[in-house]
Image (cartoon, rainbow, N blue to C red; front, side, top):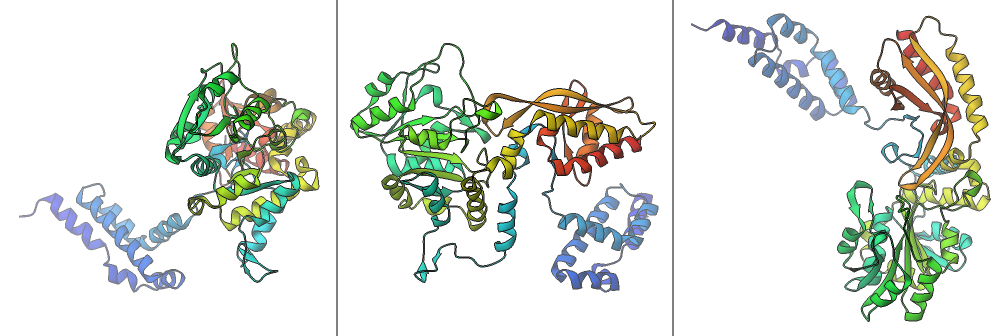
Length: 474
């Protein structure tokens, strides 16, 4: 005689239709007309297997199984919707971190977006010379702009700055020594370290100086017949303060020239303008480093430059020609979408007012008075909601540049602090994150902090909507 549990299992299984029965239903046939038969069949099998497994383990009683069997088509639709929903979503960055690596770093300028919309779904002359009617140079769209910005220099574009450093080291110093100050052997995002990148490149690391002090004679004593490169790593994502000493680029260049050794700087940030009007005085630009005589530099495209993820190598034409001849370039080169966005971004610099059109620079340069005005307007709108447990107030605060750049700089900002007598800061933060258009804020002293420096003015209305939803949900 079967026990009761076994009988329930059998009854539960009998409620479920077979795969073939489901496939013959009109609703399923309509789904098959929209998707492939194999895709629908696979999901039906997985769905039925999951329910059978719950029955076998006693996790679903007969009434639950019957109810699910009746709603199988709806459950299948929900399953398909979940699988086919994009993982990546637009979010509102209210963290106050301008170049937020976890949120995609730099937002593209409108002209770059327009170029992507116009050409990303079309053929384009990426590697084709219209004038000569044959294969052309992939870097030409960017190189022609770089040569105008930095006369006499050439460039290579790869997929990120780590790849740029790897490629240059492998090209100029494989099997040879590269001299680096111990104070510049940094770790960048994702636990990638300069010594490890150098090892993968085939170059031989030769450390000089100490963590806090490196002098010119340290480099000079380390030079040998096997030295191929002097490498400076800009302290864009860290600072050593106090009892310190370092070698200026001009000194390093003069030393390199005396010994016939090229000098490279990994500058990282990709800054192209004078940032001192915005309170940032210690971040050199690409132009300044080249003017000091660096033979080759590398930097990111999606940090202070404000473009797409990329690594850009700029330098003497002879050195760049050697980099372009390295077979490794094929493995790390950039794709057409990168070139489209990067070309449009660099054109904004040539126009002469990048702080107006490039979002990263817009956020850096936004006056405090404008942030105050926007904060007051938002508070005024929220004041129209009566009887809510939410409390919102304007606070003084500071934003960060982020993205591993200018770590000691804080930009004065205006914050909206949100608290509630009914909900914790964690709950409020989660509710904001789980909206159809998520708002990513930060928590500080049990308050949810919304930093308006990183919220685009066009997003203020959506931000008000999000906060009103919270207030009305009370």
